[in-house]
Each structure stands twice: as C-alpha cells, then as structure tokens.
Image (cartoon, rainbow, N blue to C red; front, side, top):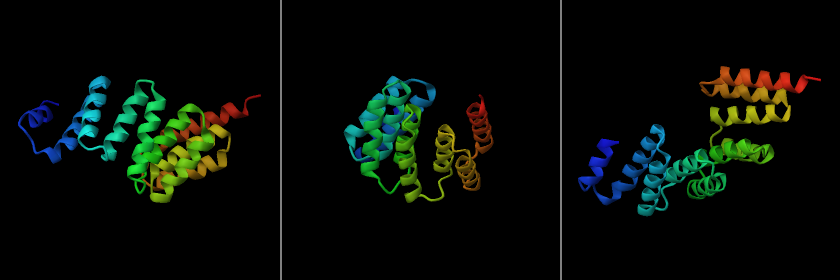
Length: 171
C-alpha cells in the first residue's frame, strides 16, 4: 500500500494512474479495508471509466459489504466493456448463485465457458449450481472438467457436492 501511495504522490504519469488505483484498491480489499478499496476503485474509474478490472473489483467490494445490486451493476459494466473475458460472467454467475438464482447463474457460466472453454472456475461454479439443483451426475461431470482445467480446490468442492447429495437424499 505504501509503495503505491508513494507512486501516486510522486506524480506518476496520468495514463498509469488507473492501474495504480486499481492495485491500491485490491490491496485494501485484501487487508479488509473495504471503504478504502471502494474509494480506490472509484478513483480508478474516474480516471478511466472503461477500465473493466476496476469494475470487477468494485463489484466484489460491494458484494462483500452486502450491496448485491451495486455489485451486479459493476459486474454488468465489466461484461459490457470486456465481453471477450470470462471474469465478468463468472462474477455475475457467482452473485446469482449466492442469491439462489441458479438458472441465471448457469446461463452466465455457459457464457463464461463460451469465451473461455478451459475455465476451471466456470466448471467449478457450474458443478456447485448443479448440486444446488440436485443434479448430481451433471455436478460430478462439471467437477471433473474443473479438475482437468486446473481448478485447484476441486477436492473441497467434491466434499461440498457430496454433502449436498446427502442432504438431498435425507427423508
């Protein structure tokens, strides 16, 4: 944080400032200072409203403080600005999963896979969505694709899917 603040104070070239504020916002987010994280991402977007990474990070910060509507707006803006990138679709998909809108989440995850067929994260989120619907064969198939595409936490997700399956099978 200190190094990034010094770069801003030193008069870094204007065209690099959105990147610096983006990085600063992400550091604040990791430190748990969501107010400063939001302020830094908003500053990056004042400097460059088309900077899609800041829209994603701003949405994530809004989601973390319990403002899903604002998070959704940010994620949608990121998708508009970078429809060829999967991150906006993934973020929206996860937001909808959190809200229980599994069908909308699956649609967005399909869109993420349309732009990045090797997204282990998209397959992992898809596996969770299928498990929430009780579609465990599809969940396992998506989990296997997540594993094959480098999703690191596939074993944890496997346990979650098995737990959901046990819940669905209870009388």
